Length: 288
Image (cartoon, rainbow, N blue to C red; front, side):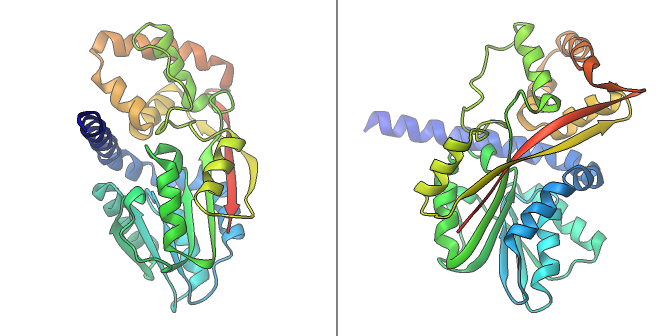
């Protein structure tokens, strides 16, 4: 009993910390909203094509961030349908709400929802879309089971998670630098809640199937991130990169400067003219 209580408290504290991270990231994601929309456009197009939203349907977006993926689904469901744009960070939901106003999207409902404890009714949505959210959840299996519960029998789930660390140097080199400087111990990339935690196709497929889905299809997709100069890239990491950003900001100035200097050397291989051009890989899945 004592062990279960301790584990429950530890999990609760872990959720609190993750929630605090994404509350803190909301402002940066809002500033980068147009850039996020642009570099993820190919991923969004794939997700929408596989979801194939129809007029009158209800589509749920989980971990919506600035909400652009759901807003594309809103085009498909039309005025008779609706998109429920959700995030478990209230500040991020407000970012999506303002983004919808900016784009003139009106058939969207905004709600604060934890995907691992989904408050929606069983069999209440026709489709679920999630871009890069499940891998950041501490219990993606539970979140996927909740997704299956709220999804109607003939509904469809489409999702994307970030590929492996080696395939995404834009997101991994800073962490590697921090480890190489001895500031933190090495971290298992498959640790739940990590950016690269669901990159393995077999692991991802198993989680989806155990949640009750069938007909799982998974494929890799490439994308690119470009930056005007190193300052642009470094600011992006600070504003966008979740736990790594919070970790960097927790370091004393001297350590943070050392990480920045070492990172600038590490990313030199991706220099393109005066800027930088990074490859990336996302893992996309569709299931019903």
